[in-house]
Image (tube, rainbow, N blue to C red; front, top):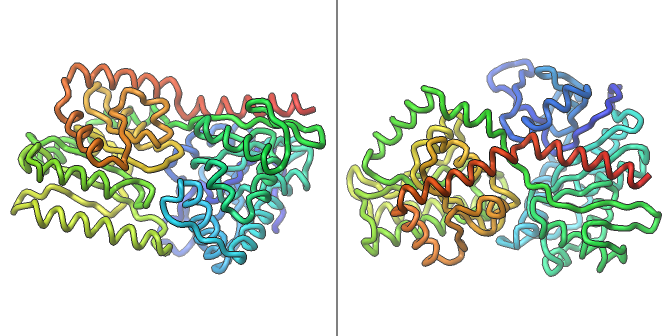
Length: 469
């Protein structure tokens, strides 16, 4: 590895926070629009930190580089490693297992071997570029072995780990052939963060049952005298920035254009998701179709817009879910639509933030129905854009956001009748009731934004290290 500078703050994540700009011969980059980048960028700048991650494609040079003042250290993955570590172990084993086995996970030893190998490479990179007593913050399910690997190399550093997806209960986690190794990997951290209290409790229970370490609530006591904390830190968004964007004349004009194109008098239902089998897209479309079939609403009353961003298109399970949803859209539109009036507008594409803000402004009812979701930031983005305190949110109780957005119309996405009734109730609700609900949800997101999330985690991580000596 090329020589790197020593940094007091290190972020380790599967991906770098930049995207390569297409169409240029030389490597041109721009920062990604994600919330995590927004939260950690000022911390990186303040401490002259570095972000370690895979650049998403092959590079000629894997030396540390800089984009808009951010120090970045790319990690090389071979084609075989992308297939085994990323598409295999991460997204065909851990992802479905951690999401309530909505799809059946596959367990292959060669995938695990690649996962160990790549995690070690990330840990080695962090060990090399972390200054003495640095803070290292490791992110997500692709890198669960890094904390213990890094601690073995650099016992002086403070290590935080945050899991962005759900953490499964004992009954599911024990299916994993490498269950103890994952737990031991996470125990290398000083602080392990989860989206929901249930995830933290699942982890502490598994550590006690499988590895024999005592715990008292969120505190876990290790045999070497070290202690760590497992606790919930529900992630959020940059409320101020997104609301400012939603208020711009350009977004407002585009919002009005969308309403005009779809029919000003129609109620617009909206779904926005990565195309993923955990998101419950088919169930919400089916519920909407039944509302029309049962004549509870008509084509002139309402329309459903579903944005499904392409995701992991080389993984077989994702190919199958795309075909399944597209069959449902075709069936509902074919059976119920007429010329000039389709019940569902299905958009399999990704859109810039401005277009998404306009859609959030144009919609009347946001429908977020995952079977399992660590948080679901789309729900918070919709609420943020509703600065006039109108609109309704139909939200799965299995999304982490349901813990905070309690004024939403909470649903069980497996219950089609209940989902259908809640969508209709949201459509017909008294505007005064909707305004009361939206004000409360907006206050929650405003007061608990992405900056407060990062600050709380890093403050607690500093305290953990002092407590552990």
